[in-house]
Length: 186
Image 1 (cartoon, rainbow, N blue to C red):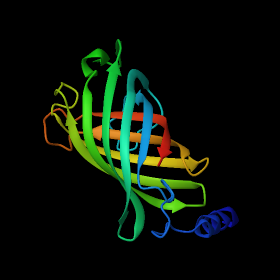
Image 2: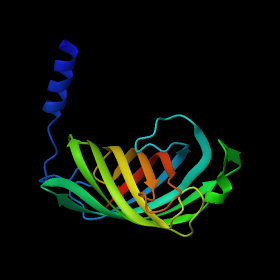
Image 3: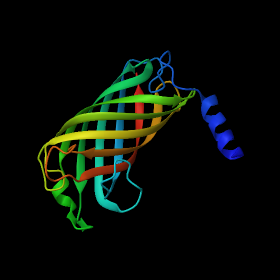
Image 4: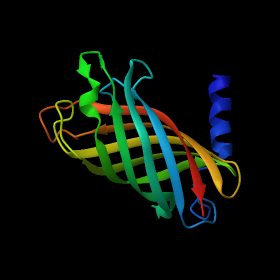
Protein backbone atom coordinates (compact mmCIF):
# COMPACT_ATOMS: atom_id res chain seq x y z
CA UNK A 1 0.00 0.00 0.00
CA UNK A 2 2.90 2.33 0.76
CA UNK A 3 4.29 1.90 -2.79
CA UNK A 4 0.88 2.65 -4.32
CA UNK A 5 0.52 5.79 -2.17
CA UNK A 6 4.03 6.99 -3.10
CA UNK A 7 3.35 6.32 -6.81
CA UNK A 8 0.10 8.29 -6.61
CA UNK A 9 1.87 11.22 -4.90
CA UNK A 10 4.61 11.16 -7.57
CA UNK A 11 2.03 11.32 -10.36
CA UNK A 12 0.20 14.21 -8.69
CA UNK A 13 3.41 16.11 -8.04
CA UNK A 14 4.26 15.88 -11.76
CA UNK A 15 1.19 18.02 -12.28
CA UNK A 16 -1.61 17.70 -14.73
CA UNK A 17 -1.07 19.31 -18.09
CA UNK A 18 -1.87 23.02 -18.26
CA UNK A 19 -2.72 24.90 -21.44
CA UNK A 20 -0.51 27.92 -20.68
CA UNK A 21 2.48 25.85 -21.86
CA UNK A 22 2.50 23.50 -24.84
CA UNK A 23 4.89 20.65 -24.04
CA UNK A 24 4.85 19.34 -27.61
CA UNK A 25 6.55 22.38 -29.14
CA UNK A 26 7.15 25.00 -26.47
CA UNK A 27 6.68 28.53 -27.83
CA UNK A 28 6.83 27.50 -31.49
CA UNK A 29 3.84 27.51 -33.85
CA UNK A 30 4.87 24.63 -36.14
CA UNK A 31 6.36 21.17 -35.83
CA UNK A 32 7.58 18.51 -38.27
CA UNK A 33 8.03 14.92 -37.10
CA UNK A 34 9.39 11.84 -38.81
CA UNK A 35 8.19 8.59 -37.24
CA UNK A 36 9.00 4.95 -37.96
CA UNK A 37 7.25 1.94 -36.48
CA UNK A 38 7.47 -1.83 -36.07
CA UNK A 39 4.25 -3.76 -36.71
CA UNK A 40 2.54 -5.96 -34.12
CA UNK A 41 -0.03 -8.66 -34.97
CA UNK A 42 -2.79 -7.75 -32.53
CA UNK A 43 -6.42 -6.67 -32.66
CA UNK A 44 -6.34 -4.95 -29.26
CA UNK A 45 -6.66 -1.18 -28.97
CA UNK A 46 -3.48 -1.20 -26.87
CA UNK A 47 -1.64 -4.24 -28.26
CA UNK A 48 0.79 -6.22 -26.15
CA UNK A 49 4.35 -5.83 -27.45
CA UNK A 50 4.46 -9.41 -28.70
CA UNK A 51 4.01 -11.11 -32.06
CA UNK A 52 6.18 -8.62 -33.94
CA UNK A 53 5.64 -9.03 -37.68
CA UNK A 54 7.49 -8.02 -40.89
CA UNK A 55 5.30 -4.93 -41.22
CA UNK A 56 6.67 -1.40 -40.85
CA UNK A 57 5.64 2.26 -40.94
CA UNK A 58 8.35 3.86 -43.10
CA UNK A 59 8.19 6.86 -42.68
CA UNK A 60 5.25 8.73 -41.27
CA UNK A 61 5.74 12.45 -41.84
CA UNK A 62 3.68 14.63 -39.51
CA UNK A 63 3.06 18.38 -39.60
CA UNK A 64 1.58 19.84 -36.39
CA UNK A 65 0.38 23.10 -34.89
CA UNK A 66 -0.39 23.82 -31.22
CA UNK A 67 -3.95 24.01 -29.94
CA UNK A 68 -5.92 23.22 -26.79
CA UNK A 69 -8.54 20.60 -25.96
CA UNK A 70 -10.79 21.51 -23.02
CA UNK A 71 -8.03 23.74 -21.61
CA UNK A 72 -5.38 21.01 -21.98
CA UNK A 73 -2.38 21.60 -24.26
CA UNK A 74 -2.76 19.76 -27.55
CA UNK A 75 -1.56 19.61 -31.14
CA UNK A 76 -3.42 19.10 -34.39
CA UNK A 77 -1.60 17.23 -37.14
CA UNK A 78 -1.68 16.14 -40.76
CA UNK A 79 0.07 12.82 -41.34
CA UNK A 80 1.30 11.04 -44.44
CA UNK A 81 2.65 7.54 -43.98
CA UNK A 82 3.59 4.44 -45.87
CA UNK A 83 3.21 0.92 -44.53
CA UNK A 84 5.63 -1.69 -45.87
CA UNK A 85 5.10 -5.41 -45.42
CA UNK A 86 7.36 -8.33 -46.24
CA UNK A 87 6.70 -12.08 -46.33
CA UNK A 88 4.14 -14.12 -44.40
CA UNK A 89 3.71 -14.57 -40.67
CA UNK A 90 0.79 -15.55 -38.40
CA UNK A 91 -1.34 -16.39 -41.44
CA UNK A 92 -1.08 -12.96 -43.10
CA UNK A 93 0.71 -12.05 -46.33
CA UNK A 94 2.21 -8.75 -45.14
CA UNK A 95 3.26 -7.58 -48.62
CA UNK A 96 -0.48 -7.08 -49.36
CA UNK A 97 -0.56 -4.30 -46.76
CA UNK A 98 2.12 -2.02 -48.27
CA UNK A 99 -0.20 0.97 -48.61
CA UNK A 100 0.12 4.79 -48.34
CA UNK A 101 -2.05 6.48 -45.68
CA UNK A 102 -3.18 10.07 -45.15
CA UNK A 103 -4.91 11.14 -41.94
CA UNK A 104 -5.61 14.04 -39.58
CA UNK A 105 -5.00 13.58 -35.88
CA UNK A 106 -5.03 15.35 -32.56
CA UNK A 107 -2.91 14.66 -29.48
CA UNK A 108 -3.63 15.90 -25.94
CA UNK A 109 -0.93 16.18 -23.26
CA UNK A 110 -2.26 14.49 -20.13
CA UNK A 111 0.87 14.95 -18.00
CA UNK A 112 4.01 16.95 -18.58
CA UNK A 113 7.08 18.43 -16.99
CA UNK A 114 9.52 21.02 -18.30
CA UNK A 115 10.98 18.77 -21.03
CA UNK A 116 8.79 15.65 -21.04
CA UNK A 117 5.16 14.77 -21.74
CA UNK A 118 2.71 11.89 -21.93
CA UNK A 119 -0.10 12.24 -24.46
CA UNK A 120 -2.89 10.35 -26.11
CA UNK A 121 -4.62 11.07 -29.39
CA UNK A 122 -7.07 10.04 -32.07
CA UNK A 123 -7.30 10.52 -35.80
CA UNK A 124 -9.21 9.68 -38.95
CA UNK A 125 -8.02 9.21 -42.50
CA UNK A 126 -7.70 6.97 -45.52
CA UNK A 127 -5.45 4.28 -46.89
CA UNK A 128 -4.96 4.22 -50.67
CA UNK A 129 -6.62 0.81 -51.07
CA UNK A 130 -8.67 -1.52 -48.94
CA UNK A 131 -7.46 -5.02 -48.17
CA UNK A 132 -8.61 -8.23 -46.53
CA UNK A 133 -7.19 -7.24 -43.13
CA UNK A 134 -9.08 -3.95 -42.63
CA UNK A 135 -11.63 -4.15 -45.47
CA UNK A 136 -12.06 -0.40 -45.78
CA UNK A 137 -10.17 2.61 -47.06
CA UNK A 138 -11.46 4.55 -44.02
CA UNK A 139 -9.09 4.38 -41.03
CA UNK A 140 -9.47 5.41 -37.41
CA UNK A 141 -6.33 5.89 -35.32
CA UNK A 142 -5.55 5.77 -31.60
CA UNK A 143 -2.12 6.75 -30.27
CA UNK A 144 -0.26 6.90 -26.95
CA UNK A 145 2.93 8.96 -26.88
CA UNK A 146 5.75 9.73 -24.47
CA UNK A 147 8.04 12.56 -25.54
CA UNK A 148 11.14 14.40 -24.47
CA UNK A 149 12.34 17.80 -25.76
CA UNK A 150 16.14 18.07 -25.88
CA UNK A 151 16.00 21.84 -26.44
CA UNK A 152 13.63 24.47 -27.87
CA UNK A 153 13.70 22.90 -31.35
CA UNK A 154 14.47 19.17 -31.15
CA UNK A 155 12.64 16.35 -29.43
CA UNK A 156 12.06 12.62 -29.51
CA UNK A 157 8.91 10.54 -29.03
CA UNK A 158 8.12 6.88 -28.51
CA UNK A 159 4.62 5.72 -29.34
CA UNK A 160 2.07 2.97 -29.75
CA UNK A 161 -0.28 3.53 -32.67
CA UNK A 162 -3.38 1.52 -33.60
CA UNK A 163 -5.33 1.74 -36.89
CA UNK A 164 -8.67 0.06 -37.57
CA UNK A 165 -11.81 0.50 -39.64
CA UNK A 166 -13.91 1.18 -36.50
CA UNK A 167 -16.34 -1.64 -37.37
CA UNK A 168 -17.29 0.03 -40.67
CA UNK A 169 -16.51 -3.14 -42.67
CA UNK A 170 -16.81 -6.90 -42.19
CA UNK A 171 -13.07 -7.45 -41.95
CA UNK A 172 -12.26 -5.95 -38.57
CA UNK A 173 -8.61 -6.57 -37.91
CA UNK A 174 -6.21 -3.74 -37.33
CA UNK A 175 -2.71 -2.43 -37.85
CA UNK A 176 -0.68 -1.68 -34.74
CA UNK A 177 2.80 -0.22 -34.41
CA UNK A 178 5.35 0.50 -31.73
CA UNK A 179 7.76 3.17 -32.85
CA UNK A 180 9.88 6.24 -32.35
CA UNK A 181 10.30 9.59 -34.02
CA UNK A 182 12.15 12.87 -34.00
CA UNK A 183 10.41 16.24 -33.87
CA UNK A 184 11.62 19.65 -35.02
CA UNK A 185 9.68 22.69 -33.78
CA UNK A 186 9.98 26.09 -35.48
